[in-house]
Amino acid sequence: MDILLEHILPTLFKILLIVGPLMLAVAYLTYAERKVIGYIQTRIGPNRVGPWGLLQPIADGLKLLMKEVIFPARSNLYLFLIAPVLAIGPALAAWAVIPFDAGLVLADINAGLLYVLAITSMSVYGVVIAGWASNSRYAFLGGLRSAAQVVSYEIAMGFALVGVLVAAGSLNLSEIVLAQQGGILHWYWLPLLPLFVVYFVSGVAETNRAPFDIAEGESEIVAGFHVEYSGMAFAIFFLAEYADMILISILAATLFMGGWLSPFEGIPVLEGLFSWVPGLIWLLAKTAFFLFIYLWLRATFPRYRYDQIMRLGWKVFIPVTLVWLVIISIAQVMDIGPWFTETAAFAAGGA
Amino acid sequence: MNSLIFYSFAAILLFAAVMVITVRNPVKAALFLVLAFFTSAGIWLMLHAEFLAISLVLVYVGAVLVLFLFVVMMLDIDVAPLKEGFARYLPLGILVAALIVVEMITVLNAPAFDIPAPAVVEESNTRQLGRLLYTVYVYPFEIASVILTVAIVAAITLTLRQHSRKLQDIGKQVAVRREDRVRLVNLRKKQDEGEEKP
Image (cartoon, rainbow over all chains, first blue to last red; front, side, top):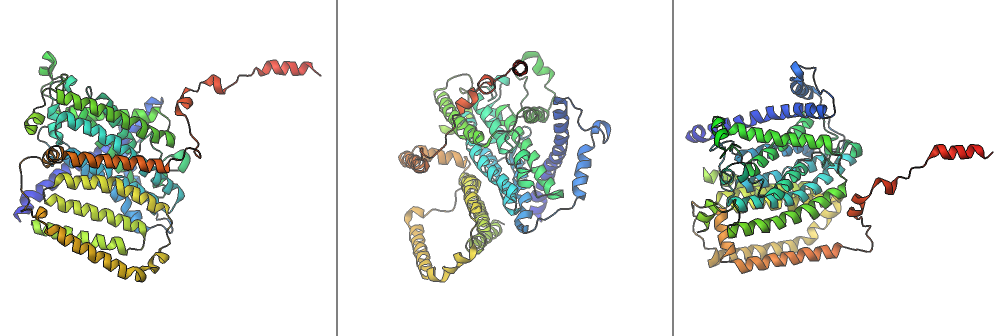
């Protein structure tokens, strides 16, 4: 009983505190996507349901709930149903280690970064199994494309994250944020600029978003892996994709943009003026910025050709990360530059 | 509480491992293998080997088995012929299994594995492992990585057949300008010329 009251119930409550707002954010990210892309293409976007169309995501959700879930003939029913679950599970589980503010984290584990990488690498199963279980050529092609793409970009992404942990000297996400203290120029986006770009582009590829959305590729393979899904089963894939987008954005904000730290740190007047803003707000603002880039990319670029995607991942990104890893490792060991001289965690642990 | 978690993990692991070899559908077998890896990662986590546990998930579940699944899905395996040889190979299988069991018993009883209960240390598991790998075991570690690199190069050389491949020069493709592909023809002028002729 004690275990239940002291550990399980508070943890469940905290999980609700994360997942609830996350689902709301997913709903309104779809709204933001349609609005932003609408304005980029000189349209207005949804504006009929509620004021400024604000109730549109709710209406969409209700519609999907009411729709019938159709099971294709000769599909593998068990795997067909488990695929959406495998897609949404990792998309939610990775949020356990994200620090929202100093000390505001569900599980403050030492190997946080590694955990995130491991859990996000599992999200590909949902797509692959959905593609296979549907018993459809188009879905199968989508699943295969996604598997090849995600495995390729995971390597570049992993190397980019290795750069971050060399710079911060820790795998704990809170410690990584604290290692970036000292104002906007001390955040890792500047010293790790190539890794930052590689990380974010790989993140776009990992989440199967445009211009890397060959897994769906509506102009070639109808809707790719989820072509046979309808109703709520389809909605869960949708939720997983958007939750993954938010996760990649919040990770980019945490690892390269100083997480919950204020951007005005170290600037004389502005620092005082904005000191009342809680860290969570800064983190969410940075996350929103990255999400906007996601939508911007989708509205701007045409889809990549499959061989171009593979070439970019293997022949451009991986060499770039390897070279930059050598450079920052040298900078770290030789105490070069303004960024790597005061990494207390590294010195203390290595002694 | 800990032993309860351990036994439930162990039961899931055994169940998944048995399913890997008994289930008829190869894709399902691969998925049960995923479950087996994942639960064994959970058991490692209970031994405070967090780095190893998460790497197991990252490397095997996240990459190796995805490729495995990729291949298995492409093969349209008919299950019945696979089952035919089961009885014929059974004696050989039992022999191999017995050998492995004997080997495991001798190895695990060796003094090197005589480890006391997992020590709970304040310091990060990853940091300890890294320090050991790069100080005490630096040569074995580096030699292992060189061997792996050689293996990668060998595998690529085996699959690379320059003669039969149609190569695309991406640099050329990107450098293409409109003038190279589009020729503007003044149709009006030609039409006029054509009308004059008859």
